[in-house]
View (cartoon, rainbow, N blue to C red):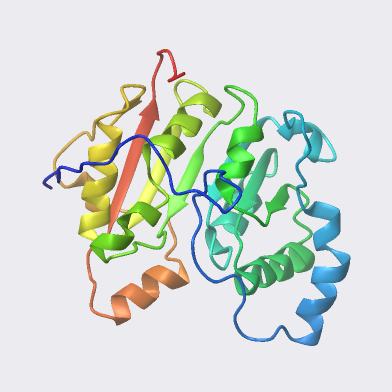
Length: 248
């Protein structure tokens, strides 16, 4: 797999208030049905993360302090996040998603299965990362993010020098940042940015391993949609956070 050169500078698009942002796109879609609306009103307030002026202690978000903390950025319908929460009940999972339809689907799974080790953030994930303390995360996922395929929109992709800087700062050395996409250009884009971040290491054991799903992987609805649309090959990239000084 080749690596495309990019000419990005270490900045990110700003909000009208002059703050960096890492999310672009719609927040609402189809009207929520009655059951989903109830969960938004009753369950979401109990597990939603709100930010204050000070740093956020992620372990304090859960009923009991979890053994590990893992974040999934843009969880879509929540299939992967809920699966991991079931498999690892002693891990606290933080899911970041702004699309109401996806939030509603995950709320249903949390409610039906009693998953008390998931907490949700419903705003731009960059805002949350910036409030987390150093080396608090035991893993991070970014699975099938919006690829923003048009060149003029590439600056809207979540992967950027700024977001990688925050992942470097918040992830513990020895942990993994996992990124999956069915868009080769976005895979190359991500690799190009990772190569500029010496605190991440991309070292697959053999060529082509990046086309093989992670252990225990189950296809998400976005992956199934990609296959239906004729995109038959995906990229499953794993980047190890290694020892080193994070960017100031």
